Length: 364
Image 1 (tube, one colour):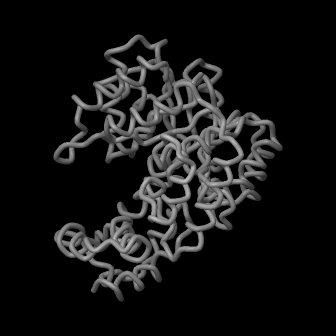
Image 2: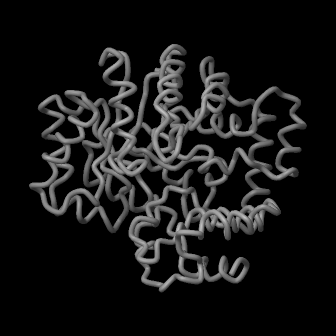
C-alpha cells in the first residue's frame, strides 16, 4: 500500500459547501495514481465529510478499490447503548457495509475513561468479529505515558494514529518521537496526521525557506514535511488534508515513487525544526474542536492564526483578517469569559484563555 492517505477533514469548499466537482476530480486522480486510503470522522466539516465521501467515492467506485477509515467520537455517545446505532448510522451515511479501519477518536487520559465506562473498545472488537470493522485502532492526543497505559490495557489495538511532523518531533507537549517510540515498543503500526502541522510547514519564513533552497532540489516546502513523516518505517500511512488539486499533485509527485530522505535532507529538516521551535508562535493545528462549545462563538483557531502570522511571519494582513473577516459575526478575543470549555477539548493542551488575552492585547 502506498503511504499517502487522503485526510478528509479539509476538503475543497465552495460557499461553505464541499465542492463536489473538485473533490471528485481529486478522488479520481488519487486512485488513478495507486493511492487508496481515505480518512474521515462524523464531525469533520460539520458532518459534510462523510456525506461527500458517499456522493463522490463510495457510490462511484467498487468497494474493493479503496480503504475507508472512520471514527467513534466522544461527543456522539453518552451511554453504551448509543454506540452501535451511531456506528451503523455512519455506515449508512457512507453507503458501505463495513469499514476497513475504525478508530476510537482523539484518545487522551480524560476521555479514555468515558470510552471505558461505555465499553466502546469491547463493542468495536465485537463489530470486528462480525466483519463490520477490518482493523481496530485509536487516534491519539496525549503523552507517551498515557499511550503506554492504553496499549497495555488494550493489546487488541492494531494501530495508533498520531500527530507526527518535524516541528513536533521533539516537542515537550505533542511528544511525537516519544509517542512513536511507545508504538514501536508495543509492536503496533502508525498512521500519521498533521504531517504539515495544519499547513504551517508549507508557509515558512524566508530563513527557513533558505535552508531548503540550499539543497538545490525540485521539492516544495510541504513535501519535505510529508517525506519526513513517511521516512519512518512503522508510519504506514501519512494523511494529508488536501483541499485543492495543486496540493494533491504535489503530494503525489513525491509519494508515488517514494524515496527516503538522505542525510543532507534530514539535516536541513532538523535545522528548520530548530528554527521553527525557537519562534514565538501559538502551536495550534486548526482542528477546530474548541469552536463548537464556545459560548461567545469565538473562532479561536482563526484568531490564533492571525496572531501567528503577525508575530512569526510578520503578515501585515493580520489586522484586516482579524477585524474584517473572523470577528464580524463572531466573538473577539476580548469577549472570552474564561469558561475553559475550549481547553478541555484541545488536543494540543494549549493555555487558550491566556493566549486569547495575548491576542486581545495585540488586536483589540
